[in-house]
Length: 83
Image 1 (cartoon, one colour):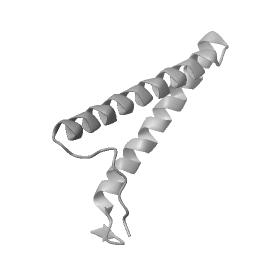
Image 2: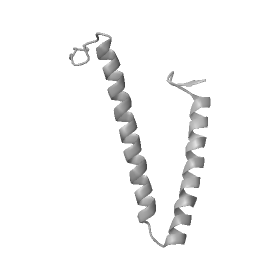
Image 3: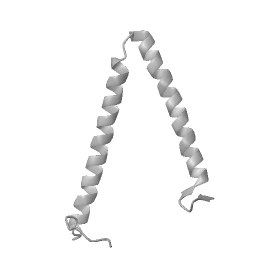
Image 4: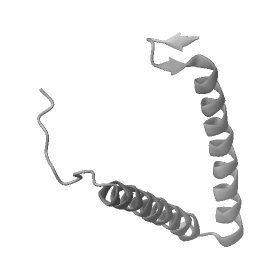
């Protein structure tokens, strides 16, 4: 079943469930780390490392995709009018 013709409701429910479960486990882990060390800096460091990993992965993937398109002869630096 589609919502507004764009997203499958079953897919949205599965992704939302994984998000909630991951958030709960993440909160428990952060609380456990804070109780053991008495500091929040380790959970902040973990978040920063995660953000940097995501940033690097998406950058390399998009650069690789752009390079492949350039090798196939597509004009990747050309601006086109969409109107």
